[in-house]
Image (cartoon, rainbow, N blue to C red; front, side):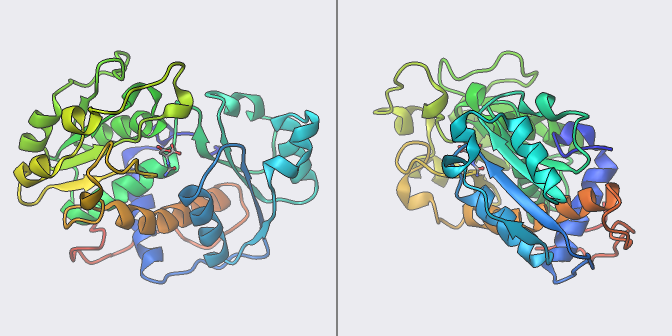
Length: 313
Ligand code: NCD
């Protein structure tokens, strides 16, 4: 049985089904679940991901157990595995975990009888952000094929960049990377372009936060906006239909001019809204795969292709 560790584990058809289910959930569909308990184990700060998981769990009718890392036995040295195993023993049906370790999932692999959803693993993966970003792009354009998408910023330290680049490519988009010197990750097989080439050419500009907490030295941000960020001038040169995304939290005036955060092209708050439904879809899929929910959530939906909804692909 699979945990939700990475979008790599899921075929293009399965990702498409998840997008369609997320859209259906956004339109009010609610799968019927019996009494189930979720625990969100967050060992790194979070506003959006944690709150939208809690919202998703409540909307699905799940009970949500309280857990705060700072007041838990982790402070007494308890390991992630022992914490997770404890939650399983007291009756949790699903765990959502965020941890700074790049490979924390390996510690749990094959050792739990309940599904685990990766809500962020160090610099490596953030697959639920990946799905909500795919949903936002698909709602906008109705396809990934033919789209040029630039992921711009602190690529090497960003789990969002790593999750999204691969998934977007598999869905049919052309992916470019754009980074200040020192922020490139040469292990990723996508061409680098400048921010100016990105704004002239691309349909989606996906900005990333500078991950100060994952840097060893101090990064100077004084000229970052001007040299590498989304200024008002660059925004004005984007193609008419092109959109700006950012997983947030945003460093206003660094990755993006503060006045552009809510501009017409910005989908930043739409991404957050979609996060609830993408996570509901992921939870539903996990519950189904682990035999905790039996209704036919994944039969093909006939969803209309209106703008704002996911069409059949
Ligand atoms: C991202 C994360 O935690 O990786 N935030 C989020 O989940 N919305 C991006 C970031 O912190 O920069």
